[in-house]
Image (cartoon, rainbow, N blue to C red; front, side):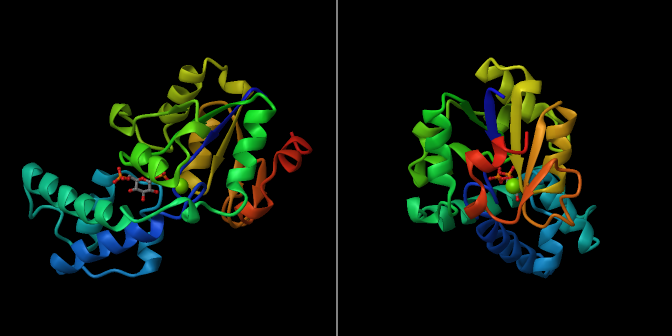
Length: 216
Ligand code: G16
Ligand code: MG
């Protein structure tokens, strides 16, 4: 293995909570309230597709023009950005800083493959920009996870063959994307949910370079 490629939300930091609060507020404005269980279906899914899923939930998918949907997505994003404007390195998930520095020290390339157009900004807020050799700009990605595009772009930018990459993800669609890219998949979360991953850690505190290398 030569490179490790990380998902952001749910692996590096728990921005999912802020996505949830911002979508929930928009849903309530539209008369489409939803709970945390429905929110699970939005994890790892792009902004546009998340909005479509919420509108479908309320049977309102045909009530808005493309421009209006664009304005709704922007409104959610402005709220989300204001919520995350206060995050700091204290919001990095347990064990991640040590894992990232161990990877650098051992000479691995480190990339990020997030569906979020705010990935660069969030990483900056966390004080982790220097830990990554490349962060894929989600705005340049045409096909969302489970499509492998974002992971393949990360590998290409790192100049590493996909077969020499480990992908790390918390979402089922993300694990599928890693496999479709021809990479080794590490899951973070419930092993009964992330059944396709080669290796699953229930949370990031037990994700260490030694533990991963022992299982490859
Ligand atoms: C993240 C989140 C998703 C979010 C998506 C797009 O993906 O998991 O809930 O909808 O990014 O975010 P934005 O609206 O900021 O572009 P990932 O791939 O980091 O888990
Ligand atoms: Mg994720």
